[in-house]
Length: 580
Ligand SMILES: Nc1ncnc2c1ncn2[C@@H]1O[C@H](COP(=O)(O)OP(=O)(O)OP(=O)(O)O)[C@@H](O)[C@H]1O
Image (tube, rainbow, N blue to C red; front, side):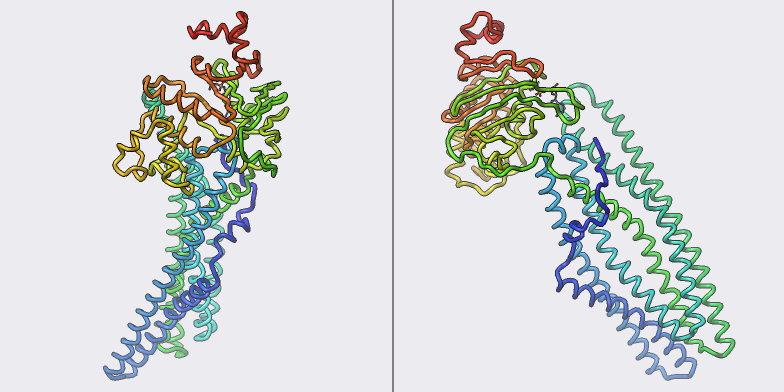
């Protein structure tokens, strides 16, 4: 699987636009941040007053009042911080939810070429992991970076006002620390990016292995899979350890730097008290302000790593949003009602990942509205590929595919989805109600229509036996029932052309009969393409195309080919013991 290319700059404007808050929320947050900054700044003024008044011999009542004032200020400061955290959290999640929805919608709109290159797990990590990293950062940015920077500026201004020399020393000290931190950030940036990339790989691998757990187990691939998984986990562990080591080193470095800074400030304050220029209370005040500088700096250091993760996430999300479907959308609608004609002219195709190796070449097929075609051929001959082109999951590299007379390249994609239906053998069912599984989460056309569709595919009794009818959560469905549910979906969609990838596995005779009947009903009055795995089911089709290595090697009316003793189709029927 290929990692996402960083095609866009991290500050992709469309990503940031999605995160932008409303005006009122932004104003409320600004007020909360201002209060959360100003209130702690006032606290050392109260301690200075307390110390100076105590040394000056003030009464107990006076000192108690000052202490109470301090308490009120501390509580108000904490309340302001809590409100800021709440507002920042809400704002961050509103924005990131918008981003998540947009990403999920965008990813679903991308075509098969893209989904072939990226595992679902990788996309989950993008739509969830990266978005959470951004939410974390936005919240932390507002709380720690903005509030921290304001607090720092406030401390420096106040210390300047108390004594410009100490203010200048504090400013110089902050600049040195700031510069050192900016340098340290460069160290932390790539390690955090590597850790996130390793995480995405792990998610991708996990999702893929879990999805294929049954096959892996049945084929004894479990041990090998676990070994591979162990390697991927080890890569992640190494990347995370390195990232954590750098984080710890940075934190240790700042601790030492701050201890030195506090010592310098204490020395300066002691010297000014000695010299008689400042009171003891003011020295305490300076000491407290110096201590206050430490917290925002430490939080800033911590944020560098989150900032890094968010920046990497933003870059990857930007790259995902910049992915465009390779298939350009046309605007011509397919005929809105009735069966649709199908015509393939000189169709050649290669999968983008196959670097030019032809999978189909010179395929020409014609179906009048209402006719059905059986596609036969050995495994790998290109039957499913023809189906994918008819569904416009890919465009041919040569020739044209026309449905209802419209070249699919010029057709409106919504109209293709509405008018061309598919029933595959790999039926996707969701852990949701029967209703949602039939409508695929769209607005229901009404319970009566859903019941009718289920009855038409022979699932009427099955539905009657469900405890909550259409509201029952779908669980433990057999392969045959899953196939029939897929047919019911196709009935509801009412397409003019149906592509049917017949189930290759054997089903019990009763289910098979239901399926045969459903196919007959579904194809009545519709054009159909059947990828047949059992020749017996080709009795119903009008035409047959035999594919071999991507070429149509035999094509004609079923009756003519069956009657021809030398036809490949005739020989296939004989081999399978099916009467001609
Ligand atoms: N997504 C893909 N990417 C690259 N190559 C593919 C892809 N899907 C199929 N192929 C290749 O294209 C060729 C035709 O495959 P296709 O699935 O169309 O055959 P098929 O006749 O439907 O086979 P089966 O009966 O086994 O389903 C094969 O060589 C296959 O390996």
